[in-house]
Amino acid sequence: MERNFTLQEIRELAGECWKVVKDRKVIAFHGEMGAGKTTLIHALCDEKGVKDVVGSPTFSLVNEYKYDCNGTSRPLFHLDLYRLKDEEEAVRAGMEELLFSGEICLVEWPEKAPGIFPENTVHVYITLAEGGARRIKITDY
Image (cartoon, one colour):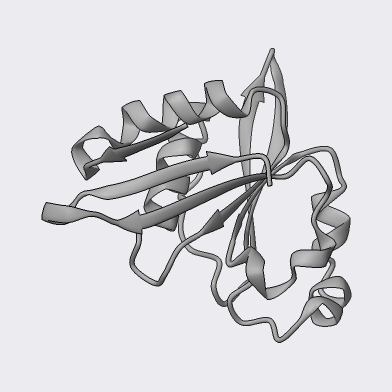
């Protein structure tokens, strides 16, 4: 999937993203600071029915939210690797354990520790486009 979108379309885009991702659990978000990674993750959480306050886990590294999945409360992890130096630090911080937990993990700044991600990770690239719009590209690599 690849297309331009505006902030007014982000909720619709989030619904489309979940359809593309299907049952895949780890989604890595690439983009420069201010590209809209956290904003899109907020919309994805809204689409999943997360009732918790969704915010950037830059300083905590991980935020855990809850959503309902067929009548069962499930965790959804929002990871931010921006402050990590390398893969070793990510492993020591428990990131790899979360990524292989079988739960949904939405990860900002995956390029900080690319070697810890499962093989079937979905990659989302967000870039700035003309007129304040954003461009999204979703790939399997």
